[in-house]
Length: 232
Ligand SMILES: Nc1nc2c(ncn2[C@@H]2O[C@H](COP(=O)(O)OP(=O)(O)OP(=O)(O)O)[C@@H](O)[C@H]2O)c(=O)[nH]1
Ligand SMILES: [Mg+2]
Image (cartoon, rainbow, N blue to C red):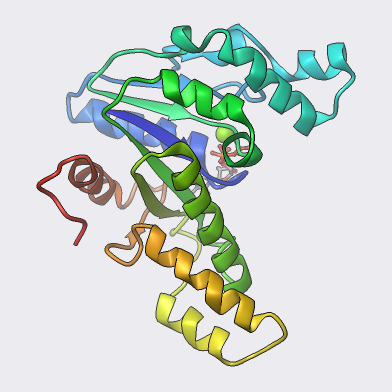
């Protein structure tokens, strides 16, 4: 199974890849990790590292670009090596950059994901502390739904960093949105994005640091890719 780990900057993607890789290896699976982030060196043993082909800091210097423009340019260059960025294994975890525009707007991110053979799923990591206000929660949900649409992957929505804060209670978010405020109507409508994520079926809470909730991720991934399973 190929697992693409997606999510906003600092949601804990690389830490999750590192911890979940160990979790899978301890279960005796042939598990591997691939770094698809040209701006960051992997904090785990990567079977393939995109930085062997392109590094964002080099692109910044050579093309006189800022960090975000250089990251997008790096991903465009990485497309040339897309086939070399794929490995085989029982489980392969693909770590991605936190700049969501790579998957929300640019074609490069999608082309790289398209090179990964099927039997693949996405994990969209949400940092629980980032989703602590209704505004943030709704905004992240909208991103999650857009990423599923854009990547055409079955995507599991997962709350990370639950060791430091509880993820939001969805009923409580709905109640607070109903209280009013200038943008409450807009946010209430955006809340419909919730239905486009796996959260109405199952709320998965993990900590990549203390390694809690990984069994739940593992079974939900298997159910997500098994036509006979549901997420309840
Ligand atoms: N408390 C806590 N901290 C975490 C957890 N997961 C990650 N972190 C911390 O969050 C910070 C960002 O983690 P990363 O794994 O680098 O996040 P990322 O999503 O890969 O970041 P980018 O690649 O820059 O987008 C680091 O300081 C991690 O130690 C967690 O489950 N709990
Ligand atoms: Mg990272």
